[in-house]
Length: 299
Ligand code: PLP
Image (tube, rainbow, N blue to C red; front, top):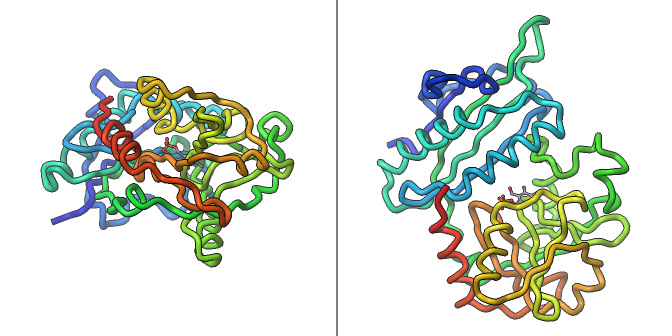
């Protein structure tokens, strides 16, 4: 039994009357992308990962919107939403039929296409559905987080837009290296801080912190990825009468943190039980309720 389903997309930037005509379901274990693809040779492309349970794809529209935003930030062709929507649903439905009741995720990608020979044009696209890892320990017991510098100032999007802060590009080598650094320090994950002392995000997560009773997260203008899970979590907090705010956060403010979470599409809400060596309270009941809400999202 395969534990992934791959859908290749021909002309991922081309709208069509029947989006399914652009799709080809292929063997995920056999090479499908060329070695001269710019996504492979330079990490020059964008991606999204959406979670899914029982056929419901969580926040798919928000992921598609952010996919387009990343394409604009990187001067890539605009991905066609309908083609990607059908590709993601097709891949997830196939895998869900094999693993009913399991948490799944679907990574979808658009690259700038092939590097050579000259004259070959057109983006490369695909969607691959996978079984999700078991995140129950992180969700229930929380994670430990070390604060590390991202080496750029908070206004990097405005002052140096070519650095592509806030784009979900395929160039995630740094996002992986900071996780290895966290592990070397005996911690689970990393919180990035800007060179001028502002709290940003994790390498694969948004950061939410409770300060004076309000749940606060940094704004996209501070060079972070606007999180789809963070946006959903804010709706849930507001529905439950907990105030929320999106604003820049100085690193010193974390000394007063009352609670914190890392949120992302597959791990969902992981409470931070230790932040740079300081223990933080974890509310397992509230976090479990939030995660149930996040898992039940549709569309
Ligand atoms: N920030 C970064 C850098 C990420 O890679 C991710 C995850 O993809 C997030 C934040 C959280 O985004 P989302 O909740 O949409 O998964």
